[in-house]
Image (cartoon, rainbow, N blue to C red; front, side):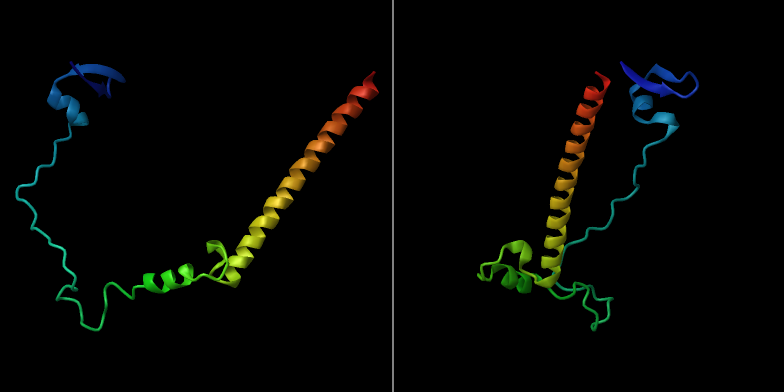
Length: 120
């Protein structure tokens, strides 16, 4: 059996298969004709000006040279100063956050001990 949501009754009601698969009275969109086939090519379309390259410059070979160079640096530091600044900022925030959490925990524990001892 098929069900659909009734907007009037606000619950599920029995329905036919066609009504269940096209809710709220929507009709399926069936194209009258198939679209034209598009085949991939390696050259730009003829309607673009010849001066414009629609793909741009391929940067992958240049980046492969940078990242595959054996200079002893880890991959996340190979692109120079911006990578070093990002790495150091991340490490500082991580260490600072850890110290902050540990101090807050220690202060909370000491406050609880003080409260318990002062009430007895």
